[in-house]
Image (cartoon, one colour):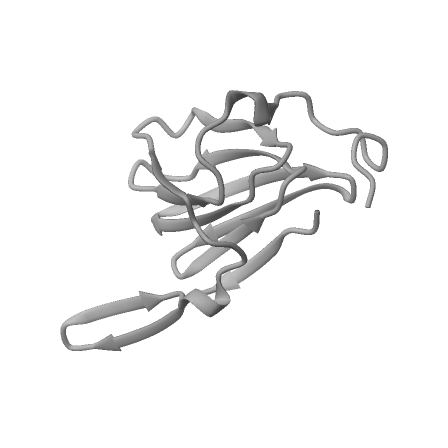
Length: 130
């Protein structure tokens, strides 16, 4: 269940910046992609976890604060470009957008499945075990 922070490779020149994550660095083969955006920074997205689905969250604009709860504890990670967070199955998370320009792209290893969701935060070391 450990969460991993991943830094994308960045290449800058006079035309701009190219951020890259090659396939060998992906923790899974993506099956689904979706984008989270909001103009209202008082809103929180997520507020759930997945029993089997793995996700990779990329901040593509602004900054977001990701609150993660799992069997190891409760912690907050802030990400902005060029960073991503890998969330294996069993992690509950919520996402707080720090500006109206914040946006997150999510890659998932599974198609949408409502039965894979859980909404109650895990109790440390009780709900999930290694």
